[in-house]
Length: 510
Image (cartoon, rainbow, N blue to C red; front, side, top):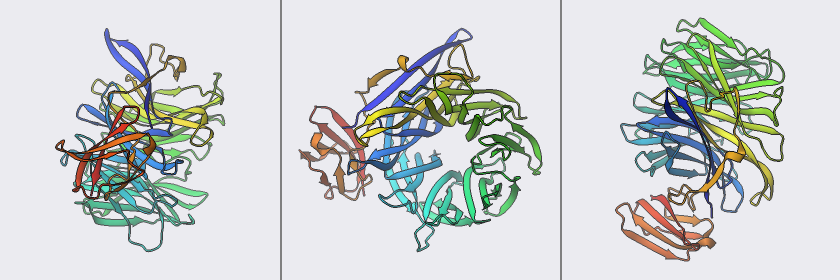
């Protein structure tokens, strides 16, 4: 049985005489490898997209899986959904308020094979139940590897982009699908050179689709391209950087005046990043390089996002082996804030000691601004398991990491650049009220034939319709489950364990 553990710290700070809650929260789904990749605010809640590894039907920790969490601003999780045999990209979660649904996109990931299509999951916002699932392929006969990176809504149509590699990785092209009513409306490939990697996207102030693409001609000749397409998908704007390197993904965001900030690798220094601000006339408004370039300091930027006051935030990783602390700071969760004219306001990094190993790792992948100007950053922070019974050895153990900080990046009164998350202040609790566990029935959605993981600990399965009517009941179920006699639709399954605990799982039958 998989049990949902939450490790949590709450740290309180005071501002203007009013107690405001800041926190660092670690979420661990039963010691599985996992991390948060995106956070999106919708109405009064936050949706978090996370990815990780699940235990497959053979009992091995080998299956790609991703999920969506529903969370309030205090980091209370009220619902979740998990998609098995599915991996996701940098931008994978799109809120479609008109259809009251979430597009959760990535790649289908069949066992013992490469992902060979993009995958779209449609999820109801209200209850995180599945509405539909389908794949996208460019139609070529030969097998190729698909890696989804970006997604957005453009002219009320879903845009999904990424790369498509030959199996021998000799060439890589960028792919863009425009989807309307669950069908491909338009498809185009980006092929400037041997390697074409799409990394980020947004719809600009002129309602044009902007894409950042890292183009590789040779190992020593790489440049970032920003492309803009109008509503008729004509290429109307094209900026090309000076030579860079692929150690840094080309993340970007748009400022209030239409300028674009893009993160590039500094070709002069290893593990260093620089920012360029590009005007609409393609000239450079400003450049920023972090001042402590040396061989022992490293930064990577995983996202850039504009804030309500026109400033912007960057998230990623920070490393500095010059710092004299108990563990080496190799790559830890990192966030910085800058003005629109390129002035660094502050930068913060967070770390947690790892038992056994003497170095710290983790990252921030995304950030969202709250109503009062606080920042909620999400990513992963790594612990270490001395022994995992699944892999039968020790292993690194990344967990979902959520930090709420004030507008200055502080979660406590000291507000240090490097903040330690103290393990001895973390309490371990088991959530008995709601279940946010790894799905035990799969595949989901299903054609009526399913497998029940850990069937030896289950005493009864009860299938209820969306109206609450009992449709099927199975005592001491086996590993193979057939529900093909049930009409297509959404069902709530109550899984009664031999311990007396009930797990609830939503499934959809085609």
